[in-house]
Length: 114
Length: 117
Image 1 (cartoon, each protein chain N blue to C red):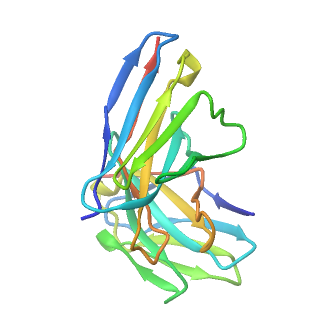
Image 2 (cartoon, chains in turn red, brown):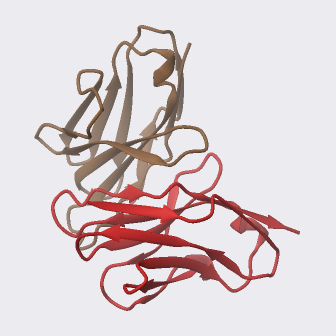
């Protein structure tokens, strides 16, 4: 079984300040982990993925995430927020075998203030 | 590369009618496609997994006779909502996994907003 908990349903930051979106996972196996972003009326876009290689993963648009097995966490960070980062972010876990179906977290809405 | 399209992007229908939604992988072959449902301000819930040429695998609680899935080719999967009712109104999203992918990455379509009157 697998599950994902996004600890904050809503995060608000000022433009130019750091972003931290928190995610904890539960899995009975070594999983793949992803962060997806969903802008209004647009499809889901993959930000980054962890697939058992380097624990610090760099993604698009300056985002990165660190896989911490001991803490079962995969928090998403960005040093400096931009107005265009305002969107819904989903942390996602998937097994590496079988159907490899994705399990989505509940989402975190990021608001960026000018 | 790795573009997934959905058609239509939105549809309004009367209660009792059936609606078909298409999901296409435009520049790659998708051995597996997935269908999700997303209610307003909520997360995506997996409805079913479809493999080309075989029956779809439905998640618990999803009515297979109501949500008919056909994966006729390596680039096309369809979801038909039969005898639609207002409670079926939702945002339906498909995704596709590349046949040559060594990762679990899925590529998502832009979604189809269904409104049943």
